[in-house]
Length: 230
Image (cartoon, rainbow, N blue to C red; front, side):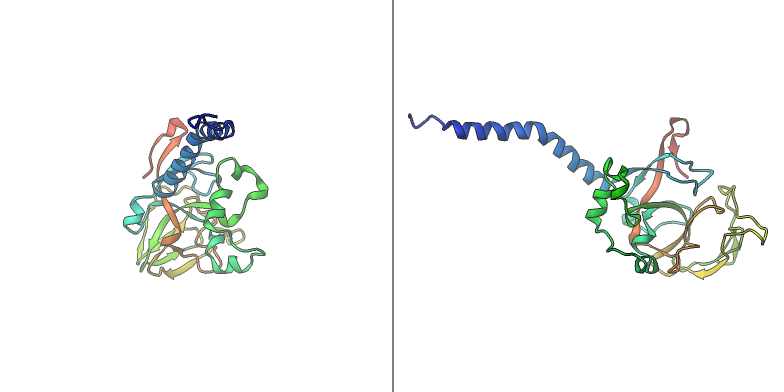
């Protein structure tokens, strides 16, 4: 055999490798870009419940941007997406029967297609969306209707349409008076009558800054309500 001729087996391996790259290279690159953009810049989320009615409706699709809150603390009134209380509330964690999934495990469980399989779901990997009502150092009072007094001032909230029922016989909402610790925020759903938010988390209800994924900035679906979120 002449020395410049390749072994057929080496040719076959080389062909297989290039074939593999041609097929899976673009797919792998697309997945890596998707993961990188989703982790560092922005991601799409949908609204699964009515806790933010009337402004955000069930199945609205939002863009959650992650850059601005890396440089500053959340502002009052901003709508934020954050990790599930089941991943950071100490009392909820104590009630678990299994270990909390790692960030990598949660990234797999929430990956499109995989996230639709109920057997792979875990409440600790969910994300929630609420409005920041108070920031670190604020003195906050919430009455049984869900109305707010912040640092001694009554707050008008034009985005609220559904307050808690005011009759004492049927009122599932809680009255709270508290001071928000530094490095945390207090969050509520706009639908005060139907939102599992800081009022109800068993370990105190304060959301650490580090658990915030990003700020809900744009609604891109449905097209009829496309636009920036106030």
